[in-house]
Image 1 (cartoon, rainbow, N blue to C red):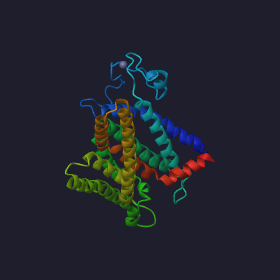
Image 2: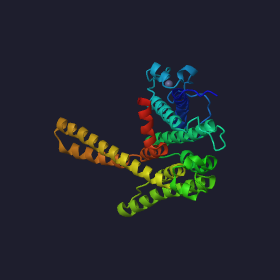
Image 3: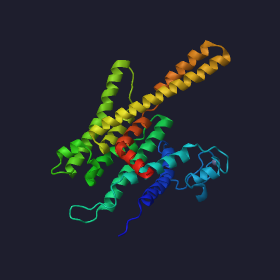
Image 4: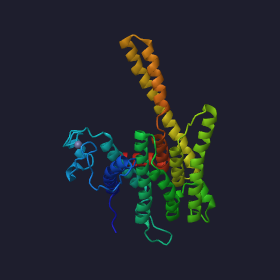
Length: 321
Ligand SMILES: [Zn+2]
């Protein structure tokens, strides 16, 4: 059988990601709403005027561009988040597909096992990344992570690990617990379970210390469940790396945010020649920094270890030359 060229494979994953991204927008919009289901009503509506979207108003990215970001019927400005989620999800699916095991893999008996391995690992990674996109977007909007994503991930992680032990081939614990050279089912499931315990547990401990030190709740339970789910897919060691990377990005973003507020308030002070305004906006900058949701940063950390940044760099090099 002749294999399709690699560029075509990556493009196909990206195209699927774009369509799935369009569905994720519905999920992000409807999950936090009481009484709305992800599949009903079937047709998407404008959140503002309830105008039912026709098929051509529902094409990923393109419709948003053609409609210039406004509802056709009521001119409601459609948030940039909609095309952004679609593009980001398409890029993540293309990345997951490009990094999935090659189609040419043959198993020990010499039979080609490439297609199933490629689709299995690629799909699990792509779906985890899509889950992180939904969790991040909802957390960004509402400061909560939907249980459907976090607890759903905690249920799926050991199941996927049992079906595809190769998901844990880089998990040290899974290799140690497996018989023979590779990773077997029991090793992968144990690696997944310990990964969930370490991921969730580490955030619980940090939250407990934070509560003792600052006498207020520092850590949301949603973050705990999200890192537990992530740990189930990446294993215990990588869960800790994800937490570290997430905290690093969060503190960089927090610092940038504080700086932005400081510049804004300095401009305001110059305009009004009053120092009261400066102190007040500094206080609001601190509050804004304190209540930044952690979920999106945690999602970035989990995503990086899931795809392995070394693999991503290698891929970018290959595609460039
Ligand atoms: Zn409308």
